[in-house]
Length: 218
Image (cartoon, rainbow, N blue to C red; front, side, top):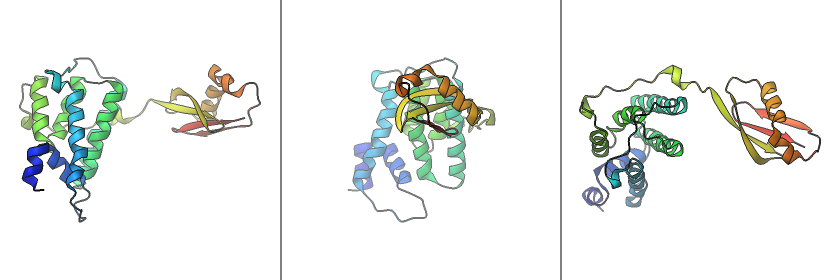
């Protein structure tokens, strides 16, 4: 299968992304025509999420939440730094993670997607320009300045801890990111949901992994 045939079947953007996603530039990569399916499906998912198949994308004028801004600025930082290292395959991974997070949050806000399309444009210019125009941006995409990440947005204010009892996940609890292990333990033990799973049995130990997980042993 020739590159021309792949471009005709999947589009130039999917072909470009696949070439970049194959691995580091310094390594020899085996050519697999079936591998392009992954980047093609990613682009289709992005297009569908932003309403492309139903007409005008449902971009929102709402203000972004702290979590949405944190994800955006993490993505800007990672892509910018990886581009400087010519680590193109990891840039594509960051785009995929970003879309997963935006789908989870149901976020179609212009304030989030406008800077994303700027950093996405070198990788998938055709789709990026199409979405930019549908967003109603007056400035051409190629003239838009590269966004800079803001350190203030990178700091996570809250962490959602999964709470397990004897190794089995039971519920989640949101706590301040700077909470100390003793405070995390106290908040978990005070949560009324815990009693449903301990059933009056004495608690032998509480294992707190800061920023990750809490496991209660009974």
